Structures are given as C-alpha cells and as structure tokens.
Length: 161
Image (cartoon, rainbow, N blue to C red; front, side, top):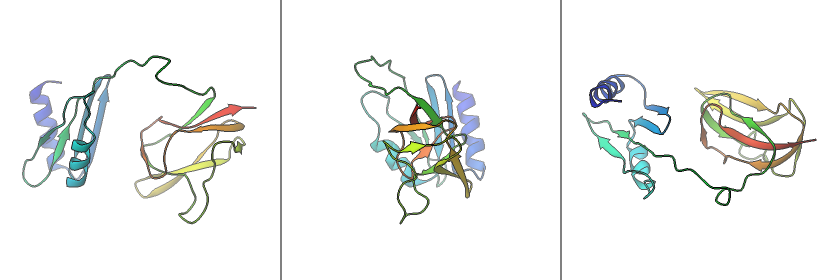
C-alpha cells in the first residue's frame, strides 16, 4: 500500500463514525483506532519481533498504523493438539460463560455434542451462540473470556469421537 493510499484511508477513517478499523493482507497489517486506551495498549504490546507502531494524531483522535512480519515457527516452538477446530463465524467479543456468575459453557476435558453451544460472540450488541459442528472431547480452549476474535479464528479444538 502506497503512502498516498494510506493517507487517504486515514482521512476517510477520521471522518467516519467508525472507532476501529483492521486490515490484514498477507504479512501487512493496518490497524486504526480512535480511542486513547487502544493507543497506549498498542504501544505497550510492541516487541522486538515487530516494528514499532506509528501514531498519527489529526485533531483529537488517535490512529495506530502497525506493520507486522510473520515469523515462521518450527514444530518444536509450537506444540499443537490434534483435533477439529470450532471457529468464530464473525468478528466480536467472546464470552465463555452464559453470564458472569455462571460457569463456562465448556472447558478442556468436557464432552460436546454437535449443535451444542460452546460460547457466545457479541457483535454489534447482538449475542451470537456459537455451536459445535462435531461431537467429541474439548482438548483445547484457544481464546480467553472477553477476548476480541476475528472471523474464522479458532476458538476450541475438539477430538472427535
């Protein structure tokens, strides 16, 4: 993406009612957020593995532009458990329990049936029940409660059977 395209996109975002914008294309990632809390969090999470975030402040809003390079991982670095992933069909906030005072829908070791609710993803104030497409044992919970998830992001791993 060229600098002029970035400036134009930033200008459009600044004039819109959106508070957050995330674009990923291969190893290129572009993230805009108009809240000051997100800006400070983005600056705190910058590591030596990725370039520092650049913050641009037109008016009173803040936008963060980040470019990340994806590093290949070796099998020794990342141990994965075999199974079928239950993925998020939407972008939103994940809730692992039906309400704050209730226990998690499912945790590692629990049995799940196809069609059974495993969590909720909130998108635009709508609570979307996420169900398992397979029956088996939950072998891995891949997200935390109240974590923001992306489209098609794995939430749980199920060992079918």
